[in-house]
Image 1 (cartoon, rainbow, N blue to C red):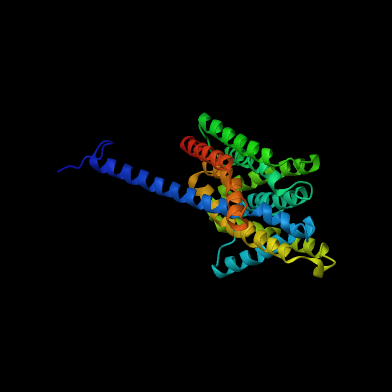
Image 2 (cartoon, rainbow, N blue to C red):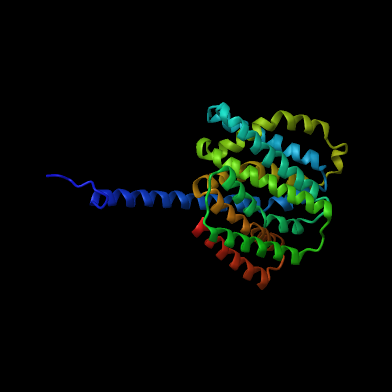
Length: 309
């Protein structure tokens, strides 16, 4: 008795359905991981704002990288990870320049001129920046409708943030814009690498590569009056070192790699609202109807972007 293996045979159809089910589970895992990363990143700018009140931007940037690199090296050694291939070193350097050095330094400098609330205007542009570099570096090919939803979501977030903050400045805005560009590149490059190396391995090796330079920078920018540094500044340094610089990227790069750079990057549109929600829960700040309404529309934009990514 012969078994048909044609494209419409029961066996072929079952295999196709199994493959689609596996792909859907992988994509769902990617979106969940990406969402966890965004929740962690939502505290980054407020924590940086608090930290630069006690530390210089250069020290904060280098110290957070050194602390995160020490933890990352412990993970790599404990889990006996192989060194990356020589062909991957260049991409890891791009990741390090983008998310280990560039974005932390530029935002720390910018937050000396603008408030954390005002910086949300530019965070609204980060999903488009990441998606564009995902097309250029990661091979993503979203449908035209994706860009419509992405642009609409970015405009809503930027407009909402701008309506809540008038404390802008030309130097601060230019620094934030540069931070968004280098961060988008670092996100997309790291996501492409994560498909081969793994999410936490990418950020860990990028931190390890940057460690020698960042250690020297830390020693050259040590504070002169340690006793004058407030506890809140230390807490801010701790958060951006452990969560923003390492743990958040474990989830974020895994999400981008599994769910797709263009699509999952749109979850960043929710980051400002997570930050405001945390402020409401932890600090008792009011959450009004406008915020809730715009957040709902942004969720629809993210869903639309996911559909066409």
